[in-house]
Image (tube, rainbow, N blue to C red; front, side, top):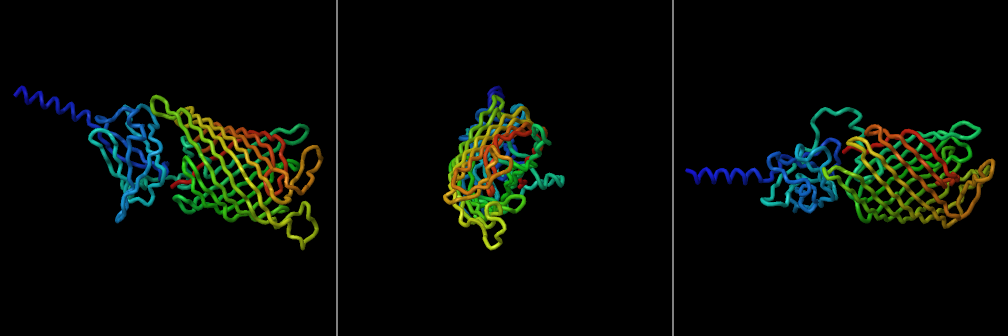
Length: 395
């Protein structure tokens, strides 16, 4: 009898140490590349073991097809005390859309496993109209948002303040790798002399992994100014390389994340209208064929201040190198912009510092320098402050 009691006690201790997965889920604000694993309270691993990417094996299971490996790029605990809330969010290298199920194995003793069915991915709880259109930007990857719109203000000596608008859209039409999106950018202000006055739209195909090499093509689009005095049809193709790094605190939450991206590409098209250097000549279409080399670089940094707020900084440098004469509006040391034609390099630098006020709105400080197509009106060290809206596309 005594031996039986001892064996029972030993077996109960062994079972208490067994690691078990209680559930796998995807929250309504998570992307198709993310799943959250919840461990059983009585059988959870240590935080360091749970957030080690090498300890996870995930396969995409599809009926009638061999399983496909989903590489776990990040495993992190996002909130609070891990002992009280033993959850880990897994970030994959590709989407789980198209999978009938995701089979997850935790690579420790006894290999606890769980299966997430695609049929459970839709949140059946009632959601607001707002949440169906926009989702918060995930700070951890420091990616550009799918939608952004900023209104900023800058004082002007001896004249009225300058008000600026800076917006971008990257709306995904077809998901996956590669993806198809509609993209648009608008940069303008109320200054008559140094308004960047750049608008564009395009259909874009891209393959953009979180790390390593990517490809992008704006295979058809247009560039124009707000008055319609300069118009280009434009196509673009580039190759990029991106490095991403994040550092976690001892409790598994994000301390900071940064990324750097380099692009090398070309733009080509046709200047179909140029009212600046070819005026009052309706039979003249413009300056014709456009070809530019376009190298660029972007650095981004995110520092969370608490669970809902963060400080973000990003800096972008782009230079356009025309192979043929293109319009350039010189604004330095002159009363009115002077139109010129030439192949001079067109530099553009933009720095943004934002402080989150809510999930969607931030206080923004912006600095810009240089010229943007199609008119390439030069802006000399413009600074402004204001409010920015940022969101990503819900899935």
